[in-house]
Length: 365
Image (cartoon, rainbow, N blue to C red):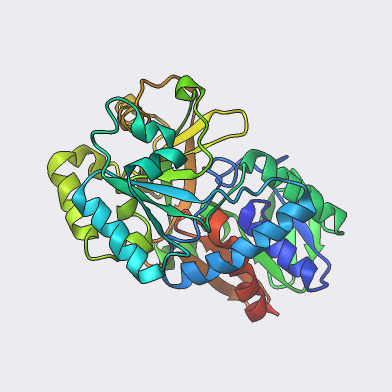
C-alpha cells in the first residue's frame, strides 16, 4: 500500500515474480516525497547497503524507462569543488571508485558540463570538480504517473483515494471496504507512525522537512547533469567517508555556520521545461510547525545564486517531507508474519527503492 516510489517499486518487483498485486493509495495521485524531489538517481555517492541497492535500482530504472515510456537521462552528476579540501574529497573518492565511476575535471572540463562554472563571480571560486557518469535523472512529476500507468497495464490494480485504517495479518480495512491479501507491504514513508507507532518509536522515526525552490534558468542555460556542491560532500555516504570530508566540514563551520545549522545540501537539477529545481535544507522533528521561515529560503537563494552566477527568480516553492531515522537508512519491520512496514529513511528512495524491494520480498515470500 502506498503509491509513492517505494510502494510502486515493490509492486513492480511483485509483478515481475508473477504475483497478483493491488496498491492502495489515500490520495488521487502521488503527491508526497516521490514527486517533490530532484529526480536524481544518485547511484555513485552512496555507500554500504545503499550502494548495493542503488546499483540494482539503476538498471531497473533504465529498463522501466523503456517499458513505461518515460525519459531516464544518463547525463550523470557533476560535483563542483570550491576549495582544496573539496577537491581532495573528489580525488580520494576517484581513487577509491575508479575512473569508470568518478572522472576528475579541471575548470575547463567542468565548464563544459556545467556552463555556470565559468560565469563572472563563480569561476574565481571554482577549483575543479568531478563527473559521476553512472548517475541518472528522471522528472518525477512525469515518471511517477507513467510508472503507475505501466503497472496498471501489467495487471496491477491501483485503488486511488483509498485510506487504510487497519493492517493485520492478511487483512486491510480501508475507507472502501476490506481487502484480504496473503502478503502486505505497508510503504507510506514518514507516515508509518500512523498505524505502527511502536515500530516508529523503536526506530526513532521522524520527519525531515526540506526547503525546495524552482527557479528560472539564468540566461536560459541548459544543464544536463545533476549538480552537487561541497555541502553535498557532508551528506552522501560515499563522499562523507573520505579523509578530506572532515576538513570540508570544518571549513563550512568556520566560514558559513548558518549553512551547517540548516543542514544545507546545495544541489540542483533542470526540468524538461528548463526550470531549475534548487535546494535544499533539512529540519527534523516528529511533528513540524506549519510555518515557513523566509530567512531559510533566502539562504537557499543566496547560495544558489553563487552556484549559478546570477540572481535567481523563483517560479515555485514547496516543502518536501521524507522519513528519517537516525539509526538506519532503511526501515524494514515485520509487525506480523505476512506484513512488512517499509520506509527509506534517508531521502534516497528514488535512488534505492528498486534495489530494496527484491530484498524485502525475498524475506516476505
